[in-house]
Structure formats: structure tokens, C-alpha cells
Image 1 (tube, rainbow, N blue to C red):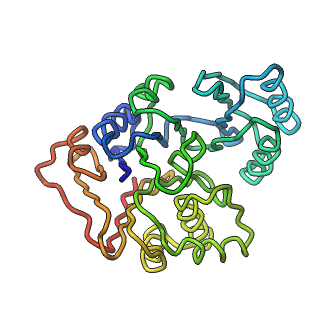
Image 2 (spheres, rainbow, N blue to C red):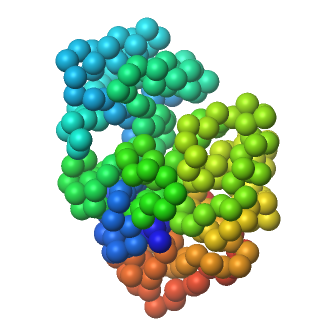
Length: 305
């Protein structure tokens, strides 16, 4: 099943995107009880050399200090926050200095080598929140309703093919280019046909989740100077199986649906908001749904601000 959602505020100003996505995903909770996640764009306000990290750390003596020491080998921690989570873990959230985006992936790999530590995401323009539990539980744990931004995407998950944990929750991101995230409902049945060429090009996969495969594919196309519209159109032709997905970028969102139309997707807009979701019930949380448009089989749509 799974539920996907996206919202864009057209005036480019800061709004309560976290609150809007929380309401939309809660309306889709019946589609996925396992975990949920958000990528909220435009609200971090970081300097050009600042990056945001979410790190899962086992509550063991001295382990958090070891993480901090590793980070400090290459940079300085600008701010930090610790959020208690489930299963005897904490989420360590920090803002760090890096000279360029190219330094982010090597740093993440260094931190991931520490036992009982996993980097959940690293970003510059968006804040990612994802965890196991219900939408309301996660929103309360992380204060999601108060998160500000210009646009965002979200997901509530019903796991069918990979394990249920914080790392496998959506959204997924790629470090090929900065700040691309993706949420997905369905399956990519030619997964290995898509993944193999990307790995031969040097792209590193962390999971066997097909959502990670899609976000790598889209990021790869964008790195080759495809427009987002062109990348989505190519993905619909190249990927088999029942799927609909929403991709987030610093400039907006895009949606794509498989050529047979086997996964649901609707969208609507007014003078203030553009929104997309698995079901109309989620759209009603952010706008008047008198003019709901069903996404057609094989259709792609991009909305940028």
C-alpha cells in the first residue's frame, strides 16, 4: 500500500509545511502502519558551507563522543540536538561546516564505519525526519508540526520487501547531487536491470530497497543535465512494475506514475497551494478539493517555484 504526499506553497514564502504534511500523512495512515517520514525544504536557512546531519546512535557509553570526534576530524560542529527514539537508540542531529558538497559522502562513510551508528541523512537545503511508528507519534517526537519551509514530501509505509527500521523508512536521498529526495508506493520489478548500470558507473547502494534505486536513477539523470521533467519521463519508460513516486528538489516537486496506472495518485491546486497524494482525503487537509485531478497512467508532472 504505502501513502505518499507532497505540498508546495506557491508564494515561495515560509509556511508550516511540517504541519501540512503531518495532516496529509495522518489522513493516509491506513495505508502504512510501519514508519513515516518527511523531507521539508526551504526552512533550514543554512550558510553555504553548512550541512545538516541526522545520525542514529545506540545508547552506549562513549559512543556519541566517538561520533563527535569523527565529525571533528574534518569539520566543526555548529549546533547539536539529541532526540530520544525507540529500541534504545537516540537521534543525534547536528549542523556542521564543510567546504563543499563533495565532502559530505566521504564523511558519512567514515561515520557509518562506527559500530552501532548509522547516518540517516545529510543535507543542505532540506530537513529530513523519519522513524518507525505512526505519523502522530513521529510528529510528536520530532516536533514536526512546527517545522517551516516552502515545500515538502512525505510517506507512510507498509513494508513488503525490506525490513522495518528507521533507515529503510522513506524518504530516500541520493548523494550524487545535493538535496534530492524521493517517496514511493509500489515495486520496481526490473530493479536489478536499473541498479546494475548505476553501480557500474560508481554509484554506491546502501540497501536493496527499490526506492533507493529510483532516487539514484533520478539523481544520475539530473547529474547528466536532464531536466527533472525529462528524468521523470525517462524513468517511466525504463522502469517496470506498479509504482507512483514523488521526488523533492530545492526548486519543487515532481510525480511519476507507471504506464499501466497500477498505483493511485491525485493532485489539486488553488491560488496558494499545489498538492499531490495517494488519495483525495489527504488533499482535503490543505486545500479545497472541488477540482481534483487523477494522475493518468504514464503521466509525469513537475511543479517548481
